[in-house]
Image 1: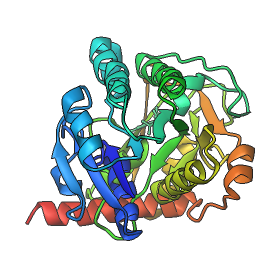
Image 2 (image 1 turned 180 degrees about the horizontal axis):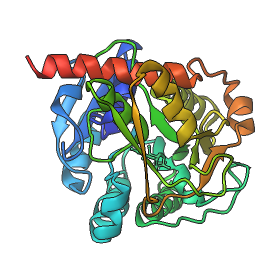
Image 3 (image 1 turned 180 degrees about the vertical axis):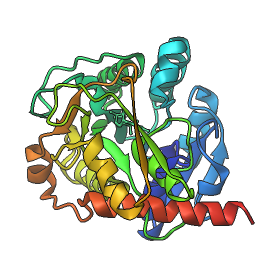
Length: 327
Ligand code: UDP
């Protein structure tokens, strides 16, 4: 079996590649390295630097490697940037997905996993399940919503099955210490915490403290990237075995406020300074998953659903990455 993974040099992609290689699967990475990183490329994978918009390239990869399964993660991910430059998100996330799908015409591709986002739900009261009508509020969320629509449309046309994964907040790093989150520019809370953990005087800004939540700060569902990786493996196996498409929320079903998360960090870094700032544009007050479907479909029991563990894992990676980078 050979699997093509677009965006395989990115944070989540590199974790999935690591696991697939461990499972002795032939992996082809297609990544333009715009948001992916050379350091995250697994040496045992076939790496092709290129773009999902390049139909001829994708067609030739599908053919020469006999690809039956694609994990499509390649995308632009910066929520703020999407508001400033929506065209870039249409081009990369929407057109890119369509071109990738068009390249599957007359191929032997039978299964496609697509990385979507919980942001397509918009603001949520209580836990959200997969049947909730999407209400994407920002341009990034909208690009993922359109991506899902394209996957469904071409699944009928070209006769493949799909697994759409709606990621909640992914954090942490593999135990191997070889892959983790590199990109700083997204300003993710747990990445920021990891960065600050290495500083003598750590400072964390909390964006907004008068949201309609239990303590006034935003609530999110943080999932460890190693559990998310497990879910992708289960998803591929499910598609191969059952030949049935699905949509799944990937979260633990528990919401943590920003303050909850920051307080966990404060226990690790006693001299942490917390600064409250105004709300960040586009943040929804709360979103967390209803996990009934994922538990039932995959008989899933997460292994790393502990916010302490997630934060410590992100910090550990940050230390390793900094050490090897500063050599
Ligand atoms: N956040 C924060 N300080 C930071 C980074 C993020 O208060 O330094 C907040 C952000 O406003 C949001 C939550 O933490 O409410 C999670 O943000 P993140 O960027 O990690 O993920 P998102 O939910 O936006 O995808």
